[in-house]
Length: 296
Image (cartoon, rainbow, N blue to C red; front, top):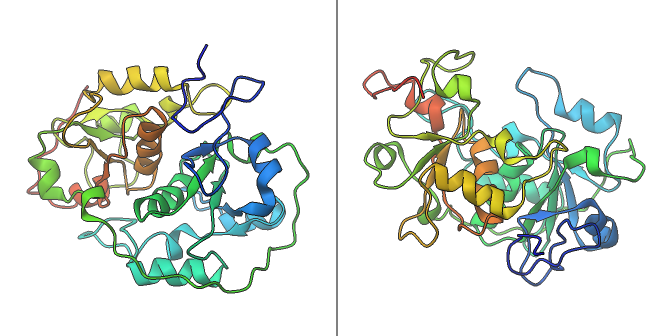
């Protein structure tokens, strides 16, 4: 029986997936056994961040995977927030490159990122790196899947050389494109926010008209690991995603972070890279002239 993982992955004895070694087809997921075996070959990135205001840095300092550097979502993986751009707009390429370089993450490094939220935050770093041609993967199952000891001393890596690379236009979508999209638009938020029953953060409740709800958490199993490719394919098919379509689907969420998780799930399902609407609902809902839909 196939493991249902993308080409280039080899199934380990437990039936879960291993990814190919750095330098060959890599990602978007690796498991903890693979990371233990290749820890010296990759940069491990802790990308914990909390919507409720808790400190990701404090969580890192309390215990992290040995050698992991902490990557700050707000300063490295996003630009300054505004109603016009959203809560987590894409960082300028210069900001992204400088932030990673200061952490010792160079152009040729392979990165494995994790969080303690099912990969929903770590996916932002991984998607950004993969979008510009980098080798990066999420640790499937996150920190809870790590079987080894944790350390509390912060990792110190020497600054690295990192080129400034523009975000590729074919991996992104702007609000006007989303409004006129003839392709599936995927809303990664929780169902109650999609339906407009609650909106604890952004200006207006509801969703972009025509968007289908694929909550990021629904792509995970009970253990917090990505579901098999066949299951993911069925989920995306129900949202209108078809294999081999000429144009890639577009994903959004509240601020463009958990949408990256859904885009990695698309890759894990063998359905291609997809496109990110970076401004997401925080940008869309801030403009009262943009239409809003509610309900299922």
